[in-house]
Length: 117
Image 1 (tube, helix red, strand yellow):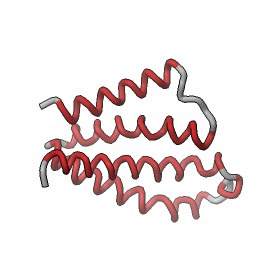
Image 2: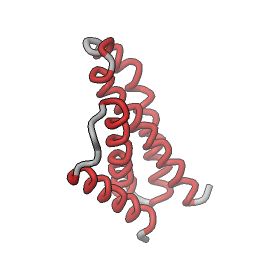
Image 3: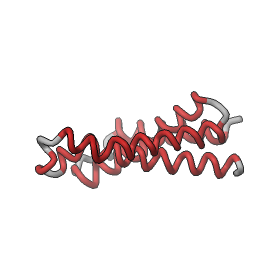
Image 4: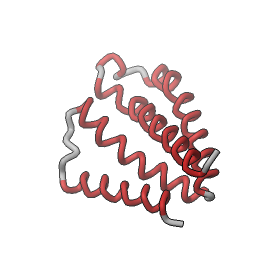
């Protein structure tokens, strides 16, 4: 597997992991049914999220060559998923100067981790 394929696969796992984690934390805010069900929420979402992050780290580490590189990639990708999911499901705007600045910085972090050698 090439370096690019490893980074792409790792990033895909991270994005999916962040998406599942968003639902783990925020389903209670979106759907009333989830409000008082923390145990079932964790049982449904925690193991898939953990597996996705585990594989994300495996491939990102292989492609980027370091744990800090993989961690910064995961962090940057988290800020790409959270604003969109929060806007779609909770109708909280990501179009504030603070949030847009954080999204921009996250794109920079991902770019640095992927392209800076």
